[in-house]
Length: 170
Image 1: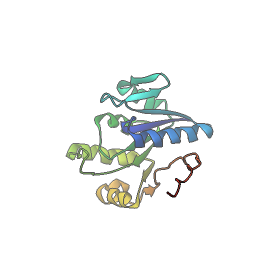
Image 2: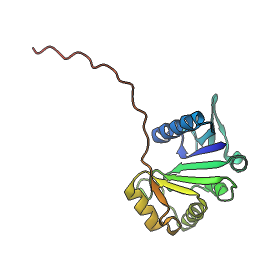
Image 3: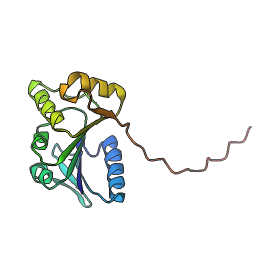
């Protein structure tokens, strides 16, 4: 099964990179074929993460959506124009909200809010990284009422490293 993992912002963002890389690793071990896409940090385009770098995939998203079984979008709740291709995709859509309505993020104007509501209505599953975020989503987006599951961001334990010797007491 092909799974397209989409970062709603730059894949270079530490959270998106950690979460999507970890998820891709887990999916690979489980026998799925994950592909990560997101914007590289140096530009505003959607780009595929490929072994030798990033390529512009803005025009490829509709094709990728048709050739993928599951699309998992991780984003901040800010609707971006390229996300419109996901509404008409035949693949199962999963939304993971990392944030929503944060004062430092661009606000959704009425047209983008309506597009976000269509995207939410299309989603087969919706997750949020906290209870308070899930409550805000369900309150603000009627299509999500009673549909948001809370799944905190995962993390990979760091390898245990021996502590350095304690300093001398003098």
